[in-house]
Length: 394
Image (cartoon, rainbow, N blue to C red; front, side, top):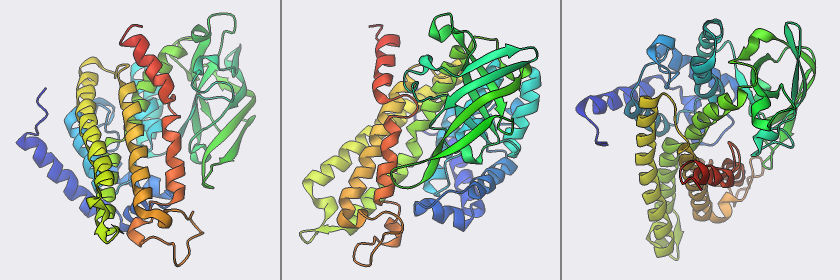
């Protein structure tokens, strides 16, 4: 596959770059650049800007309201969005549920939910993990029992990202407890306003409220909210997770972080010389840049393959592993470059430790928050097991 960009693709890059320069509000750009809180209002406004242009659902085909971009165009869009300090598009409805409904949903479900994802009427969250079922997702215990025209759901989900903003949740539930674990799971859509649902915040190590736990007590959900057939949820779950892991790779965001690390290393001095001239530090920067270039090529290859086959394959686990390792390495390099200035958490900055405004994103809170990326979406250890079984057949 030729990975050089054509004249048409370069023209598309210029169009995307001009769009962000003209349409991305300064307060949104600054919030991303400085590592500030990306509120629901910020995300809603950003999504609306992209939706008006027709660029919100970057992976969707034209018939469902997407731009119908090629893999290279999607790659270029992500690069330019990150270069402009645009937020990451919230993935749960757009990059996860949307493709599931296109592949497995009924026509009625597609007509009901896909336009509402684009318009922002529905904000979805993901109900997969449980206290005893994280990387071992097939051991989930949340039950859904058929009662006439409804399922009655009881159980608990955890690590529900941005659930505090959501009005709907897509869940994996156990509908048959008497078969092999993977064979007794179903995929169901739930309105969070349904009686019997309680959402509780989980405070993270840096003090932020990003994730939640969700409790279901005799929650009645219409049967028509089942996606696909009963007990085929594991097939849907695997399909969705390949899309999630591709998104977690975050190639564009790592490219942005690499440029920030280089800029920091040129500003910061050690022993009277710019840090970028320190052989050990420079070697680490060079290695992570090599790894990132290799991942960019791998990402394009997988996007191209997904376009031909309709869905990413198990090799997306490679992207998940390398993407999170690279992102964590870049955060560590930024932390080391700033030294003591990286130590304060937000609200704890002192006159003699505070980083310069352009370095505000590289504080302890951002470093610690980023440690989770090698765990969520299936831990990197689990991803290596997947690769061993599916690709090496061991």
